[in-house]
Figure 1: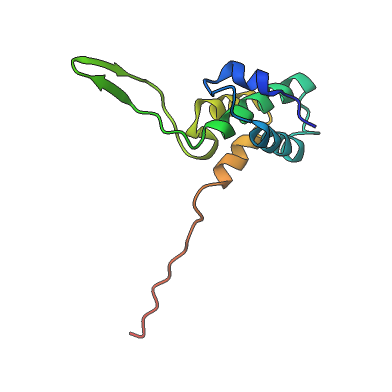
Figure 2: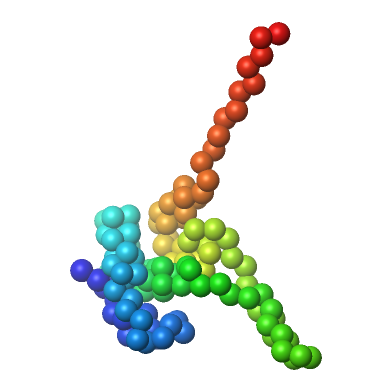
Length: 123
């Protein structure tokens, strides 16, 4: 059962309130239940992590410009993003809140697989 509501996720994002966030909240809930419950985090912390993960999952497909310009007026945004849970500032907050490091380990494991190439020669 979800720990957060659509209104709570709406409060920390700029998502149109008419967008149904249920799939994103459900995804965050499932991740929390499977990866973090029983790891020593209290219910309030699990709720906060679920809130930030819900926002993360709702925003991962949005593109954000590094700079916007109209004529001589420009606005630059300063932030650093990575891959997986680090692709949004919301996912970054969830990683920080997880003091067990579990999400960080999952995040590292989501990268591209490592390949081993062997050169076989008949010489």
